[in-house]
Image 1 (tube, rainbow over the protein chains, first blue to last red):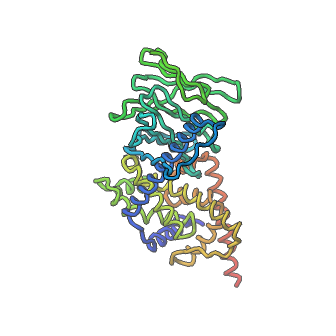
Image 2: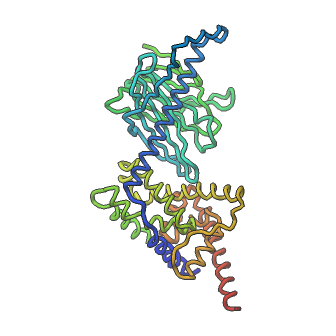
Image 3: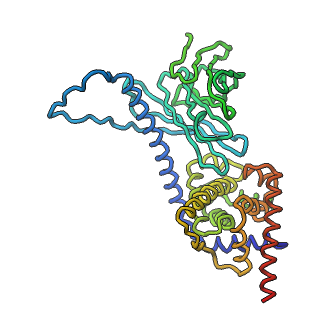
Length: 239
Length: 177
């Protein structure tokens, strides 16, 4: 195999000659289809999650079902669309991994009449399929967190991200291991949400086996703005 | 050799950094390299096209990378791994062990090499392609594949040894006939 490089070259060039590239236009269309699937997936999961939460809050399971009126038609909720998707940040991870955070917003307010933002964190490692986690953040954003990937499939890191108000200058995540072992705070990377979105995103990568104990946000003077316990969606904020 | 490749790759992007010109310049080269990994023309074409589709989504970022072609190749290699695993599962369940790969019209020696490469573990094949065909230094090939440099060196050494043994045996068999 002294001439290995030459023979590999011959093989690769022979293959290249016989290949008929499907075309850049098709690649672009495939890319757009892929993005639409991704966004639709995030939107669907969000709508289902919102629906489940509302059902859980509003349904009175002990009450008898109301009688159906003959003329009434079922009212199906219309799926909201995500629009204005832009990348707010990306970076490299250990083990050759990469991450990318995209943000968009729903085209209509939520049932409570508030505008909702959508984040989607995509994480990829060599030899593994991409993994993404979508989260929604109701405006005005104070402190939100999306930590589903801390309990997802096996990854060399445990990504957590969220959204905070624009006046936030620092976010730290306090991780825990197991039930009780609370660890030292880990500073999060802050990302600007852009001119259309008066808020910031943050992202942090914990080690495998760690989950979120608490998230805290601070202003530029080091004053604490909000804190949010792991598993909760309601931050406690001052001012 | 790698420097030459890298310079060529930058030129291939074109001054206008246009996705289409990048696609036209790089598709066949990357797909040819992927053929050496996958051993099948159709698979090589599919994973390369999918990698370009992903590049088109992030083109504003990919085109500012030092070497966009390296980004597409890395994604295509990852997709080839996924496809390889799916194919292995499919083969196990369907027992389609007689499936013939689609190969190009090249010399008998090159085809013999393609056949022997297919018998190697996928990681070894990727290491051989990145180091011996693309011309990447060991450290960079290791980074691309997400393995330590020592592991990559081991894969390369074992791959070369296996190829030498298998191709040597074949030549011996031909001589004996």
